[in-house]
Image 1 (cartoon, rainbow, N blue to C red):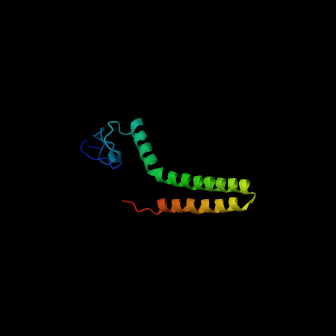
Image 2: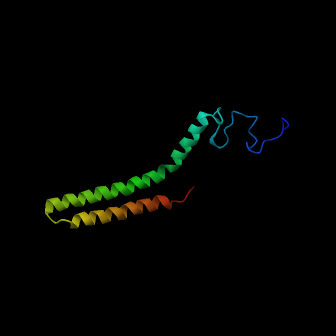
Image 3: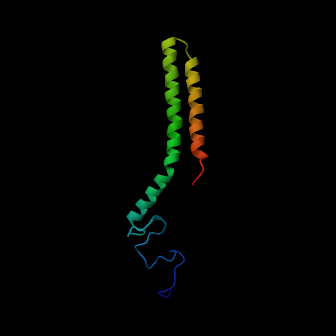
Amino acid sequence: MPEDAEDPGTGGNAGNPGNDGEFGNTGNAGGPLGSLDSFQENVRRSGPVASAGYSLIGSILLLGGGGYAIDAWRGTSPWFLLGGLFLGIVVGFYELAKIAFRRRE
């Protein structure tokens, strides 16, 4: 292949080792720092999804635990526990839906 021809597999960056394409200028295209940049980008993009999962689990545990504590204190087992679990599921899925259906800007 002639020197000035573009290789279709590299997107035209074969002669420019300092350009890492989509993730900015790292100076180490294809090396371990390029992998680190892509890992950081994936972690950044997955943050809201992880937050939704933690909100779901946290609300179920918190409200279910609160219901259990009220049942133990009042002697009304299992009604406040069931109410707390149900409310935790509703709140958790509401938070999950807010994040899942958020408009991307």
